[in-house]
Length: 252
Image 1 (cartoon, rainbow, N blue to C red):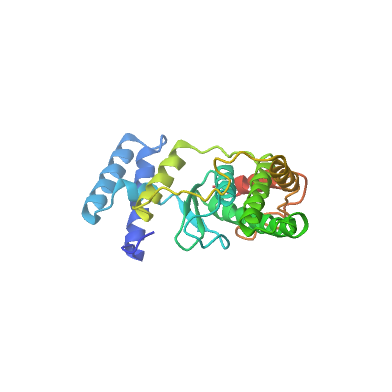
Image 2 (image 1 turned 60 degrees about the vertical axis):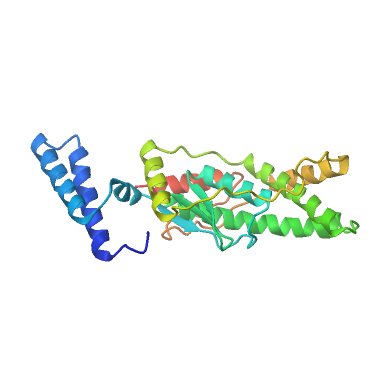
């Protein structure tokens, strides 16, 4: 998780977590719980292990293989990443490398990164096709890019109709927050690039958005998830829903 982690420290933190689990176990006797708690507290004090470090061990992250390398991603990409993050109960961070980091409870970050990667490729391909076929007569490059962004905005809105938000348990939220605080202590606010902000859109620009929405409704995730090699192939009318179900089946 950070540069100070060593195999021995990781082992000690995992030992503390196991002791704390025993202390919280309703099936443990009062003596067992008290002994486990005392041992955990002593190890934490001796090794300088914080409660935050222990909670953070329940979370992990996975980074996308695709994305913009610009300092500010376009609004449509930010919307797509946020949509996938919410679908799989993950927090989201945009990295300086131009990648997105999905932070959640294993195996959901890997599934979320996979879903984003697949959909981002489909959207990028649809964007190129729309520019070549529908915007070929637009001579001003800035206008062409801006209208293509509207198409992408609509595309993400179309995909959103297929996505159900996965509920997050309170303890999972605590783990994700602890992980993020330790791994990314100096976060700043992200301002995605919106080329159509504060514009009064014309009819043909609304049609750009509608075209994207229709195209996005046909988006598919029809390949295996690849989490541990055990997830089924995702084929059908509601692939994102099936992906969520596959991920739930892999939860401990």
